[in-house]
Image (cartoon, rainbow, N blue to C red; front, top):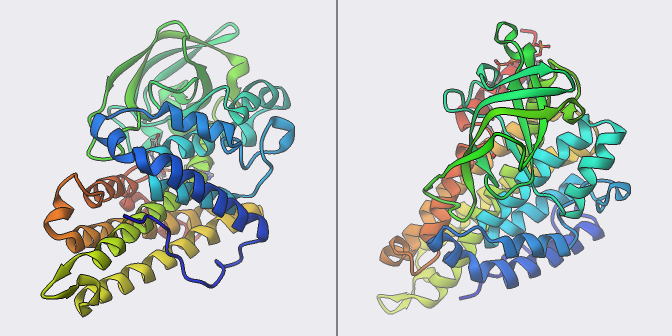
Length: 391
Ligand code: CAA
């Protein structure tokens, strides 16, 4: 069955020659290397380390960072294109990638000192280290300021105690950006952002989560028991942790929007290939008006979601404030991914309900985009807060 991405013939909105080249290159890698493994990874809940190695060898894991740190020096529209193409083939691979780039390397780039960028960002850009982000806790998901994982100052170190939940790249990462509390009375103003290295004393892992989708992604709790973290691994100052988390999530949400667009487009492609082959009542099911209208509706929404995603990336590349644009893109794209993948299952009929065909996997993978890096309800809150600021 063909999995070729069916975008219209008009060149994508505002894409440069370089961005078109990135799209074509990553599409080829994703369809050749990642798409054929996606079902097996899902079935076996297997972290695809070999996919990470391919991303590293292709020079993609440092894509939006300057060449002096081992990055490729490309823009965030290119980054969104890469995430979309990966997700169209394998959602697990796209989130492994976006968590590394958006949630760990990016805050080191934005908030790190020159020395920290040299020491921490370079290995992330070169793929010698994989990154993860640790904000949510067993008792605090949407309410990030309520974090209770404690960081107490002790000489040149912070001593960490507590647990963090839902960590993408959980057992596989090397560097974890951990948001911890130095003084509960200060609430969000007491938070600190620390890079914690795997292998630190008292740093252990909880069980791998058995998830509905993105099953190859390694998601687990991480636990700190008197874990020393050198102060030289703090991004910014004590009290900057909440800002680091929010700025990081602004960028991360564009990545999730791009992931949602890729999942929706990937499912659409599979559904079209199926609808062209499958016959009922003496004709191909893609010749029935009911089915044709579904394809039209889905592609309209997917194109709109892609444009919103690139719009947010362009704002980011131009150094503009993009909190609202990122939240709008994530909110819309994730809901489009859910609606589209449900329709794709419907087009497959009974075959959409069994794992022999890819439709049900795309539907399961789509759901998480409405939840992680801020639920759809949180995105609505962020958008409203930005729209009504000062009123
Ligand atoms: N950029 C910079 N600063 C920001 C900001 C932003 N986007 N948003 C808020 N701030 C600042 C505010 O200006 C304010 O600063 P001052 O104290 O100096 O005035 C401060 O932060 C507090 O802001 P709020 O009062 O708006 O904060 P709040 O407590 O009401 O929370 C929230 C706001 C939007 C609900 C926020 O908590 C939030 O985004 N929650 C969702 C968290 C989330 O997305 N979690 C997902 C975790 S990651 C993940 O999914 C796992 C993975 O690995 C993929």
